[in-house]
Every structure is written in structure tokens, then in C-alpha cells.
Image (cartoon, rainbow over all chains, first blue to last red; front, side, top):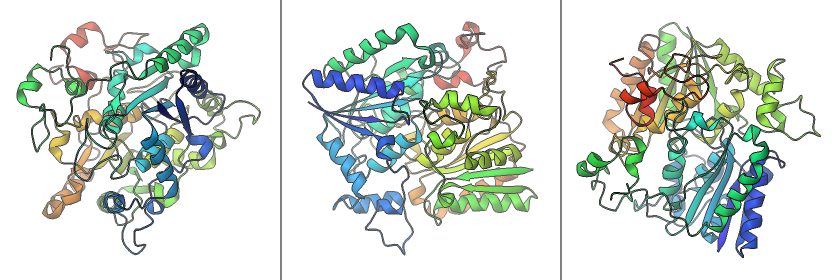
Amino acid sequence: MNILIVSAHPEPASLTNALRDIAIDQLKADGHEVQLSDLYAMNFKTVVDRDDFPAVDPAEPLRPTVASMKAAAAREFSQDVLDEQEKVFWADAVIFAFPLWWFSVPAIMKGWIDRVWTAGVGYQLTGERYGAGRMAGKRAMLMVMVGGQESYFSERGVNGPINDLLFPITHGMLYYPGFDVLPSLLVHGTHHLGEKYPAVVEGVRERMRTLFTIPPIPFRPQGGGDYTEKAFELREEVAASAPAGFAAHIHTDAE
Amino acid sequence: MNILIVSAHPEPASLTNALRDIAIDQLKADGHEVQLSDLYAMNFKTVVDRDDFPAVDPAEPLRPTVASMKAAAAREFSQDVLDEQEKVFWADAVIFAFPLWWFSVPAIMKGWIDRVWTAGVGYQLTGERYGAGRMAGKRAMLMVMVGGQESYFSERGVNGPINDLLFPITHGMLYYPGFDVLPSLLVHGTHHLGEKYPAVVEGVRERMRTLFTIPPIPFRPQGGGDYTEKAFELREEVAASAPAGFAAHIHTDAE
């Protein structure tokens, strides 16, 4: 299979890059093809601006969403965006490896999402999303280096539960475009891994071995009947038996 | 009072910038001092890298958190970061005006947070956070342009509730450094505001008039007794009566 890894750490000798390289090693050992977008090494442009839309008249105000929709049919995007989109189209799975900075991805990775998820790629003019869309049939996964103690991110931890903090990414940035999103691979306490390191490495290798077999997070597809037709809100009977918070958008075992 | 506005939209004629300028107009009319960081106009550097830490030996690997902690005492950060920090120190309130892109801030604003919230500013070597820290006594607020329909972001909406989607920002990026965080000012359906525009403008003006009088979101302070001492998890008796999800970290009316 084909795997794209997108990574974002400024230091080649970082834990992020070390575990990313172990993932690549395991994937290749298992016979997969791998492409890497190391965003810092590429000096990837981070901001959406006028240069992203070469077909927009310089005399017109730039409305990014409108510009993206107009550019989608002829794919009139800047070359670096087109190159990244080609890698995503090629991939059967996309892995995002990054340190959690201020409870989200580093800016350079947010910039990759902001720029590469254009109309026709990240979102469809026809409105398919959440379980449908251009990325349907592909898998995606986060590989997250978390600096703080695990308890801070637990169900009752002061930061909020880690999977809820990642929901805008897993559900919003990945399930929305259509990916099947795997449970995030979390590495906690990264400042003091010490003797835990070999187990972390084995965890990365095992996850790579099972990348195409473990079940994705069972997010509810928008078109699956759980949401109302135009407002796209959980139907009352679904909400009644669903947990509160983001978890309501995940199928429960009982269903 | 002194107000810093940080805004992030590539188009000067955007709704974000129009409402930001109305906010500035109202604040000045009410006798406040205003500084503006228009991140696109400033071409603000977005990525954390080695240039942010001039004191780090080029032969050493860059560990951003360690580098930041070492640089904090003598404030050995790059000049553009120091300039932004001075504005924040000067301000009694900081307002972030931006379009919601992929359920978060645009990359350039994430870069402002990643870079400006250094050790000693965004986080303390002594561990104070969530209701304590360098920003204690200051107010912060998000002013968010939301492209989708309001129902998509409702309590049961398919995207998840907007205030939960913003929690990694309001709680994680702002309450953590010590700000009192006001309820976010949300502008929904920004692609089709039409005749709603005057009411939106009045909403912005009214919010500016009450910037220092409306109550902040009653997030639970880490040191307020609701969390355990070292693990920083909600105490069982608190969690038992708290709602599920991120809302558990907000005081309820009953308390």
C-alpha cells in the first residue's frame, strides 16, 4: 500500500522525527511504499494568501473560500499545493507526526491543512463530508508527542481529555474530508521517556503493522441517518442515548 | 484601558478586518488605547525554529521547550517575539479576530501563539497555570467568523458545539497563561450575512462597550481546590456533579 507521512518538527534529531523514521522503516520492511512531507525541511509555506490562487484577479478582493471553489475545476492552485495533493491522492493512508503545541498541531502543519485542503479536495462543492468526500476509502492517523503528564489529559485531567482536544483535528480536519480516522497514537511524557523508549518504539512498529487492519474511530457519517437533513443535527432519538460532548458523534458499542 | 487586537485575515477588505476596525473605532470612542497586530500585514513569522532562540548553540539540537526555558530569565528571544510580548504586557485585554479555518485559528495566528507564548510568558517555570500565570488580571476574547450554518455548530450539530471546538483555544491557549477569558463573540453564516450585518456591527460595538464589565467564562482554576494536587484531575466529588466533556472544567451555576 501507499503511505504519506506529514511531519512537523524543526529539529532533525527530535523524538517526533525519530519515531517518524521508525514508522517509515517498519512500513518499508512490510513492503509498503512511503512518501514523506517533512514540512520544516521543505520550508513549506504556511499561510493562505493570494499566491495560492493564481487565477484570482489582483484587482479583486481575495475571498479564500470563493477563490478555492472557483479554482477547483481547473485545479488552478499553486504548485506546492498541487504537489501535496498529488501525494494525498496517491496515498492509501496519511499519517501526521507532530508535537502537541498549545493543544493543537504546530502552525506549519495547520498551514498544510489550511492550504492543501482546497475545494474539491478537503471539501466538496456538492457538500459531501463526514464519512464521504474526496478522501473516502483512505485512512488517516495522528502520531502525537505530548509533553505533559498523562494524567493532565485524562478523562478528568485539567487540560481536558486528549481525544476531545484532538477532535477538531481527527473529526474536523480528517473525517470531514472523508478519511477513516484511526485512534491517535499518543506518546505521553515526552520530556522524560527514559526507559520507556523501547516500548514506545515497539508501539509505533506494531501500529504500522496493523495500519490497515485496526478499526477506525466509529464517527457517525453525516449521511448515515443519525443527523437531520438540512440542519445536520443529531436526531433527538440518537442524542437521547448518546453521551454528552464530542463523544455523541461516535457510535456507541450498543448501536 | 489598553487593548491589543491580534487579527489574521489575508484580505484587507474581509469581514474579519471590517469588524475588527469597528471594534477599534468603538474602543477609541470610549477612550481606550488600542494597538493592532495585523499578522498578515506584518508578515508575521509563523514557525517556531532555531531563529527564535538566538542563545542556543548552533551545534546543539534544538529542543524548543528547553530552549524557551533557558532563554526566559534573560529574555533571549527574537526581536519580533519580544515586540509582541511587550504589547501583551501593556494590554489590559487582548482580542483575537479571525475566520474559523478547519475548526481552529488560521496557521499564522497559531504561529503567533506558538512563538509569543514562550516560557515566562505563556507558561511559568514554577508551574502556575489555569487562572494563574503571567496573564492573570488581563482579559482575552475571541472574535470568530464562522462560515458554516449555526445549526452545524449547535449542541447537537454535526461539527460539534462551537464552544467545545474553541475550548483548546479559550481554555488551552488563553486560560492556561492566566487570562480571564470572555465568552467568544461568534459571527455565524458569514458568507450570507446580508441584512443581518447592522445587527452584527451593533453586537461588536456592544461587546466592546462591555469588555471590562461582562463576566468571564467561569473556568475552574487549577489551584482552586477542584483538582487533585499532583495529577491535576477533577476531584471525584466535583466530577460527580459536573457535566461530561469539556463543560466539566467550567463552574456550574449551582456551585
